[in-house]
Length: 339
Image (cartoon, rainbow, N blue to C red; front, side, top):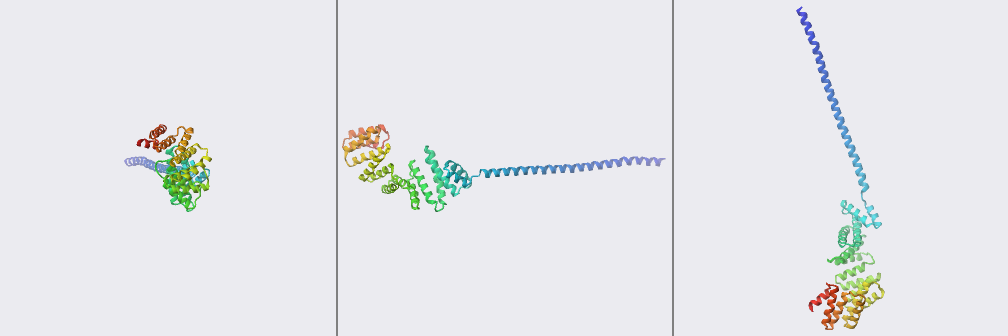
């Protein structure tokens, strides 16, 4: 009885144990399976994320590349704007282009030229000089590495840029205008205005003979009232009064411009004064004042005639009239400081 009971008792204990072992095994297997599934899920999520990110990067890159090439400015684009005389676009797109390729000779040239043409179109003096400075800077860079056949044109444009800078500032750039305009001529460049600009630049430097020579060459190309007046002024400065007078009368016979007429008649009156033909000089000045009542130079000239006739009281009265019209008239100020 006892043995049977013990055996029966042990059997009852083994069965639940086996079940527990199996359950534990199932639980472990389930956990392992779950871990594998979790790892697989994580792996799938990571792979999916990488694919999505790569896809987004590729899409963005393609978009950016397409957009870059779509908006990229080429030399041909700038050349087309130049051929259309669209200097504003050449300026804007040329500036962007040169940020990436600062020594592209073609773009430097077009950009420098466009700056020049934008400069001469300005009414604001500050803007004019900003464009001129940029023009000169870029053209000098272009000239450094330019092809031989392009150099004469660049020299001509540089000469013109310095000429305009000289005429619109208190600083002197006439020597550089002369340098580059002469280089352009020497290298075979031809332009209708090159000799006239040279003549005016020489005049600014006080080189009268060179100025007259340049103006004389300019007259062979084309004749204008301003050119005739300029050459007359240079002959007057060189004290060749007869030739100066001839050119002045040519101006008076051909021009309808009041400024040119006034300038020519004032020089004629000065010539009469220099020749000591005082009655003619006074007559000319009085005739000028009939038409140009506020001409300070005419009153000053009358004062000089009276001074030459030793009539200092009348001379002072005329110089005072000149200063009433033009308070900073240099001639009248100087005379009144003496007398």
